[in-house]
Length: 103
Length: 173
Image 1 (tube, rainbow over the protein chains, first blue to last red):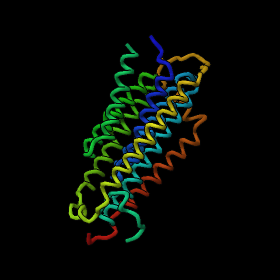
Image 2 (tube, chains in turn purple, cyan):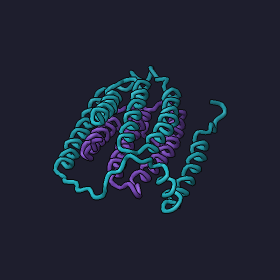
Image 3 (cartoon, rainbow over the protein chains, first blue to last red):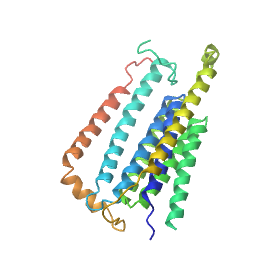
Image 4 (spheres, each protein chain N blue to C red):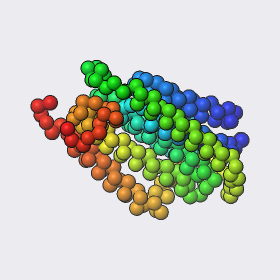
């Protein structure tokens, strides 16, 4: 049984994080930005779990990843509620055109 | 064998992430995100985190992705008449893409330089043949009890807050 070196996990996680960052900057839709943020959170979780392999007694990395998943779920529900309110108010989901708090 | 599976699943995750980056249709992007989440869950399994992989599939694919697709479908109706009144839209889009690619690639080069030049000294054996379920349960109920309870309160607050925010306060619309 071969052990995959931890650097491979780190490289994959770095690639996913950078693609998620590029998505969050590039997309012209508020939910597209949310997709990028979810991808970035997943990439961070890969790092935590890859390092948690070397700590099999008290798997702190996996527990931290579990709490990251909980916070991501809470974040995406509140963000979607806010996006739906913004869409009902401005009739658009383009972040460049939502530049006022009240219209 | 494991290495081939690792490269296959990480390639799946990265290719679907790139598809999200380049696709114009957000529904396709959401389904590509589904594939990326599955690839990441497979990477969790290969790293010996079986409970986290199942949690990933249940929470992300079963919950968050369905929620995101609902959000996309509820906000999908594009206002065609407003497109002609925004003359500088294309210019803004190209600028945004330029900065996105610049920041993404430069951060990736920086991170891979750090990873390639760092020298990790791992202590402790990598025992990944055992299920992590019992360890996670015991740790959550003993040394991580306070974060566990705070996470429960956070989920309750997020539930109430999201329901209150999404409430239709204007019955006429």
